[in-house]
Every structure is written in structure tokens, then in C-alpha cells.
Image 1 (cartoon, protein in one colour):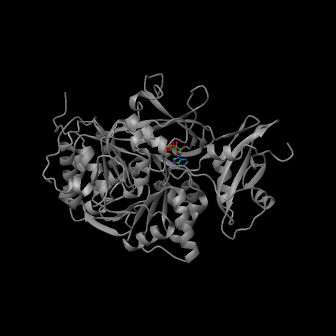
Image 2 (cartoon, helix red, strand yellow):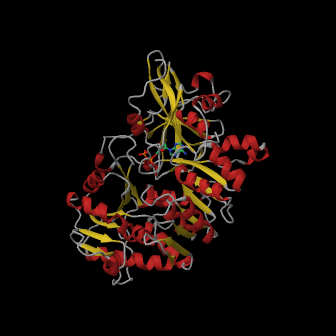
Image 3 (cartoon, protein in one colour):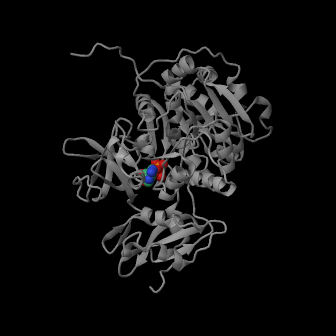
Length: 547
Ligand code: ADP
């Protein structure tokens, strides 16, 4: 017997309809590439996303055709999120920090038809357009009178001229909720880019989940700042969850330096912000250097790579901001776990609570996870056994776009498909996940594993160190030994031996790195993560002392 409830597909258009009807006057504030601050509302975003949809109809774009963006976080990008997906096309957000050849490769692989870009990316578009064989129209996200002449880019129009004259009357179509809505290529810290192809259903379920109190806890009372880019796994779903709850949204545009982000937080009374550790490093640096405090910020989600305990401590203790450590990946839309305490933890000491907050957290309802040994046998949840982390759930990929790389799932005895994350982790008895490392970054020393994350966390806890990256280097006896590359803070003084002494008592003796390499900068990838592959290349001539 079937239930007798209404059968309504979960569609992205329903989010913008809801935001318009119930939270029409909630503000959307954007710092534009031009540098000025632009203000609009959910009501206007809804109307303009319908204009976008009408413009796409006029382009004769078919259902599931791809529309790409090369854009920072801003209201026009948000209109495309809803206009493109809501009308049944697929939004392909491209990371502009990728190499131009990689961008052309991705655009061709996705068979993008139209590409919308911020004017600051015009030089990039000029460099790649001839190689992008499927794109038939280029749209600059600007007013008609801002479009430069003689760009050399064919079929180039301004966004406002393209959509501005269209009707804002557009009945959002209804279709199968499993239809594709958006796509994102993995940032490529490993192998070739592969695309996760999200559906309306996966996006809506993720949007509900992300807003939950034990997840990002966002509501109509929040002013939300996604510093995480809209080209980085849909800004962790915030553009959807913010519509679902009717939050005010503040977009930082291209200005991600500490001062710009701080000024925006203060001016727009931001209560909740989300970003990767490298961006927060710049923000904390600005606060410390200028003796500043936050007046409105209450919570921040930090994820994308391991958040050093020193950063959690600084936000929490010095600035009174709750840090929600999160783990996820492109293939997971991206949220997997988030760290919030349970009721029973409230009676614990601040030290015990801090130890929990350092972990990546508990699975969100909808995400199932397990750790397995080398034979695929499930390992206990005791906080000690570590193994390969596998996940499954309705917002986890089952295949990559165009079947790239074959079947990505491992099938268990019950025939269920699990996605191997490539991460190594422990899970404790309360279900708190702790990422030990990425499987290829783990240092294998004499048959034992050393977590590069642990080594880095200790280094950045030293007051003179701004950033650290640990890699394994060849050792004739132990196979591999860890070394740590560090960047000193401006004015920070520490010697190799002093830093090595700093490890004493903080980790097992055999896990202490064999050497410290002082560097000017550590290579950072397109989504703000440390590029260990590049670092290994840079240090390829390095030899361990005495070996
Ligand atoms: P890519 O896999 O191409 O780097 P993603 O943005 O999907 O791109 O990165 C996902 C990976 O980032 C995870 O598999 C994990 O290794 C790492 N990661 C994400 N969040 C955290 C975190 N809080 N702690 C440690 N590692 C993290």
C-alpha cells in the first residue's frame, strides 16, 4: 500500500519560490568585482533568475544542457544558480584558479554551451576561448556599458543586456527530481579532474541537512557569509540552504584578504561564515595585527582541509566564535560530518570539549560511513583503529560524469555501493570521525603510519610558524621519514632545532620529523589547499641530513 501524500518532486526552483514568497525582503549583499557594494533581495533575485531562464529559452538551450560560470561569489552568480538549474539546465561552476588548459579541458568535457564570467576573468577567457569548442556564447557578468570593445572573444554580450530586457514571468517547469542540476569537477589534488553531477533531489536533501542545528544551524535570523567560493562545491550548499531558511546572504566577491573579509563581517553584521583554513589564517592575522574583535560573528564552519587546533583555539578563546570543524568532498555535495558536541559532553571540562572539537565530527543524517582495513574488513569504532574511509548516501556520487575512471564504488556483501573517499580515519565510540590523512599523504615509516596532519598541527601551534606542510622523503632504513616545510610568521624567529624540540612530548618520538625546511611559501591549489604534489616536486632534490 502506498502512502497517500502529495507527490511533489524536490526541485531547486521550489527554494527560490519559497525565499521570494516568505523572505522576499531578506537582503543579498555583494562586494562586486568593481569594488562597490551592491544590495538586492531574495525577491529581486527570484525575479531576475526567471529573466535568466527566459533568456536561456531564447537561446534554444535544451533540457540538461550545460551553462558554465567563471565567477566569484555575488548576486549575479546566485541568479544563475537558480535560473539555470531551475529551468532544467545544468550549472557548471568552473574554478577560475585552475590552469587555462585545464579549464578548456573541463569546458570541452562538460560540453558547455554558454559561459558566464566576471570581467576580471576576461584575460582568462581571451586565453581559452579558441580552445573551448562547444561554447557558442560568452556572457560577461556586467552592465552593457561596462563591456570592453575589441576583446577578440566571439559572441560576447553583457549579462545585463542579455537577460535585462526579458520578462520576469516564467513558470518553473516540473520534472523528475533525479534530473541533473549542477556539476563540479574535483579540484584535482589527485589525478585527472572528474565531475560530480548533482541532482535536484540530492541538492534539496543536502540543503535541508546543511541547515540543521547540529550542522550549519542557519536560520532566518542569520547573516551568512560564504567565503568558500560558489565554484567550490556550490559554496558548500549555502546558496541553497540560505534560500530554504530565508537568511540574509553576504557575498565577498574577489576580496578574500583579511581586511576585506573583516570589514564585510562588521558592516553587514555577519553571524555565520564558512571557509577553508587558509582564508581564516589571513583573517586571524588581520585581527591580531590590528587588535580587533568581532562584534557579530558567532559561528564559523571550517573545512576543506584539516583545521589546525591552534586556529580553533584562537577563534574560540580569543574571539568567542564557535568553530564547527567540517569534513566533506566534491563527491559528497560536499558535507559528510560536522563537529558539534552531544548533550553528555556539556558536563565535561573545557579541555575535554576542545579535544572533541578538534575532530571532524559526526555523520550528518543521510551520510553513512565506515572504516576498513586493507582487506575491506570493517574496523571498530574505538577512536584508535584507523583505516580507509568509505561513505554512502543520497548526496554521494554513484558514478562520475561520462563514467570517467570506471565504477567508483566498492560493493559490500549486501550488494550496497560504498564510495571510497581516499581518506584515512578513525571513528570513536560516539561516532566522531577524525581524518588521519589522505591515503597518499600518510607517511609510512618502518611499517608504521605517521599522520602528516598531526605533524603540521604541532608546527602551526608554534608562535613563530604561519603555515606547515609535512611530506615523507625516502629513507634507506625506514622507507620514508617525515620532514616538515614551514613558513615563518612575519617577524617570527625559530631555528630548526628549536622547532624540533617543540615536538618533544607532543607526539611519539619516532613520529617527530627528521628535519625542518624553511620556505618562503607553501604551494596552494585552486581551492586553497596545500598542494603536496607540488611541494614534493619543489623538494625533489632534498636529501635527509646524514643519509
Ligand atoms: P579534492 O579531492 O580534489 O582535493 P575536495 O574539495 O573534494 O577536492 O577535497 C576533499 C578532500 O579534502 C577530502 O577527501 C579530505 O582529504 C580533505 N578534507 C576536507 N575537509 C577536511 C577536514 N576538515 N579535515 C581534513 N581533511 C579534509
